[in-house]
Length: 203
Image (tube, rainbow, N blue to C red):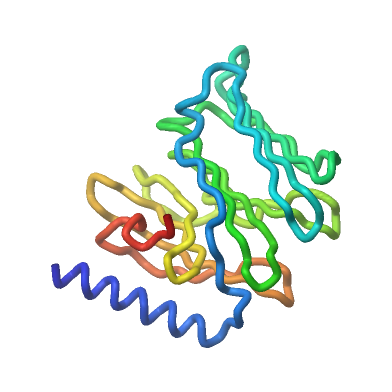
């Protein structure tokens, strides 16, 4: 019990210290969550959602393919005002794919998380090139074997990527803050915690 309390206190202190160097653009909120959505899809079914953004209406379609190779079982297309800005295939995933949307409350910009038990991505529309950009890819960050990545927003409004082993209740975490000048995410290694990020995340 003491360890859990100490870990929570340490995370709060780290986030408070980080917040002192970051303005309001570091505060995020989850606005949409389809947890493990692909598990409920039949072959060739999709979730189809549209979101109002500062750049226009962005529509996401995430379709589970039936007659595709194992490395192309999930087809993700994004359109901004009917212009295609993203088109990618993803492999079969265990246990399933999740899709969530988070908002930067400072400027209403939206970011989109696509994750499975093996990989987590955070995407966002980049006006300068008129396409979606990959801001965070779990494959580019150090993590131990037998851990699964997840990207969430905490209850106090921070973007965290965690690599977790649920059998051991371990959670290695990276904190991401938005740099308005660079128009990109900066990150900090928070170390490993002895409880899962579900305890801290927004619902």
